[in-house]
Image (tube, rainbow, N blue to C red; front, side, top):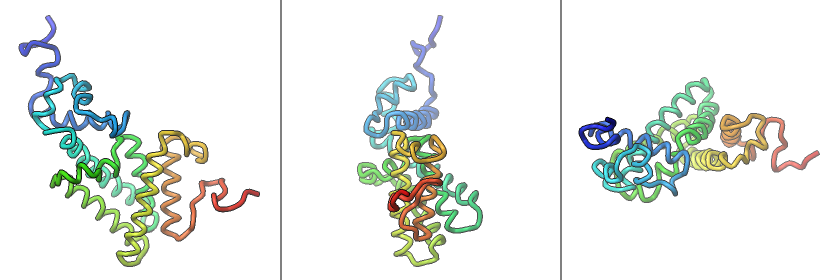
Length: 222
């Protein structure tokens, strides 16, 4: 006979200490497939085969679950940024630019980016873990921006704002296939390359970044 002493095949599938991390991981899967707008606690529960009430033993509501996801995302992104910077060598501009590609690849895989980490409802929760993780993430990027420019905080902040805007724009528009039409490389890697090129241009003072083999948008075609 299938099932267990709890009375069904799904009950008891997760021990108390295992359900919380499973809910967070399943939330990433849902975000990657459907985005934040379609995210719901009930959908996450169904993915795990648990009752829709089970997540509320660990999270008070949807926003508290998303806050835990956002905290994990900030921590993972910080590690991806460190790895990308280290892999780019010693040039400070290249180290900073590499984080744009890391961001595009991460959001493509996990579905959670700055829009989740710094979402207004989640910031309003004043969750200490999320606030600390978000601060560490921004501090890391800010330090890389200062190193890339070799200038003061004001210039680094402006660069960081442009860098984040560009990287998030590439990550957001990538699923629609826009950048596969202009990049010599297909898929998320091609879009990541474009994000790195744009960030590199921002650091080096170029007005615009063009894909390899493509005319700059601001330059007339021959």
